[in-house]
Length: 120
Image (cartoon, rainbow, N blue to C red; front, side, top):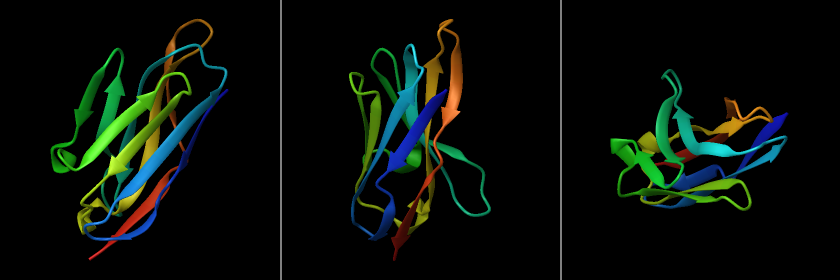
């Protein structure tokens, strides 16, 4: 089994910063991609940022220039640095990983979610 454990969410004032971290552990035999999604109340889950092998990143238009994703492949971790936060960034943030099993088949895994609240 593979687990994704997030940390770093919380309450911050508009204009502030937060850093989210996610660590993958368990029976994993390779990571094809890791990233972050978010879901605000009453809305669908949406992509925030992803990092895909070998070195490709993708951001939602709404966070470009404010958020930065980074991975540590040796530690199987992914981080999301969030700057200039806005009230509309308020959501539960989920870590996502496309992780290979011992047959090298890639599967989707999700963390439990960490809430981010930005007060205006």
